[in-house]
Length: 190
Image 1 (cartoon, rainbow, N blue to C red):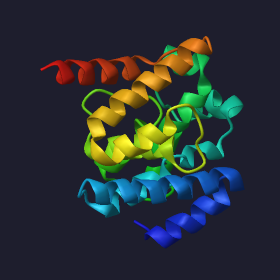
Image 2 (image 1 turned 180 degrees about the vertical axis):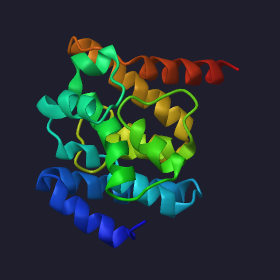
Image 3 (image 1 turned 60 degrees about the horizontal axis):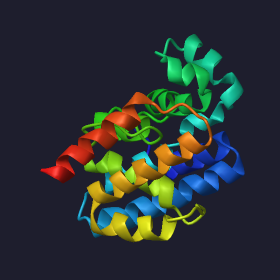
């Protein structure tokens, strides 16, 4: 496996400059969240840095690329191919960056849709992607504060924001998002 500096250099060459800047912001935000929650930083750093490494393939080409690589594509991804960058990212993380750690790979895989049973690492990557300094949407400041206090409450707020956004835009909601939301709602009621 290459070191973090080598990964950064390869990522910078592989994705558009704006996407690379976003990835660095997510990486920095994830490390701040890791500190707030006393979580190990090395795995979080790698997952956050590489979370969008699948974006080297454009959304229009992502279905064809995923099929070519033999990656499973569900009907939501087929109709909203932008979601496939997470699966392409896992593929790239494994084959291009030498990542074998399943927790890191899951952090990359679930950073767009979320999922029931996410690890703290995966939650940190999901939230860091949503609250990095370049993000601006109603409620983002409240979400930023909450993310440093309680990961599950922040995930619940993030899911709620995402679901509302998707409904307002007439977009499909991935079943993993619903599963993650439902899991946290049930936990909050107990």
